[in-house]
Length: 177
Image (tube, rainbow, N blue to C red; front, side, top):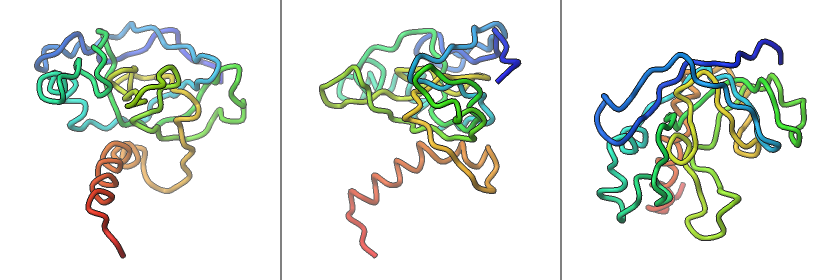
């Protein structure tokens, strides 16, 4: 897709703490997709407790002595948060089918980590990898899902993290029909 800028607006998390740790920047480099990634123009981003807990360092204080992230790794600042995203694929890496360009997508918030063979084997969007509080974000193509429905982008961006939480609770209680 043409007209992808070289710079974008983004909200950067500069460290653990309060809202003062979020910095709005207007000159952040637009990421380039790696071979297996897509570049998404963000249409809407949700915010939820995962974003807040990551910013405040809650996971490192209360969640099994983790290093500030779900995986236990120490966060690398600055970081672009935003676990929930809806957007349009505008560019693809060399190993991704070009037909994906133009697809409206949502993204799996907790993604498999191909570099990690231990458990848990995941990285979290907006925690270990940059997220949706920006105009553009790169994500592995296999972690994006084409959406064709009448819901607005804002409605779709409210789903991924909250859905997985609700699904996990339903599975935990073994709810039956």
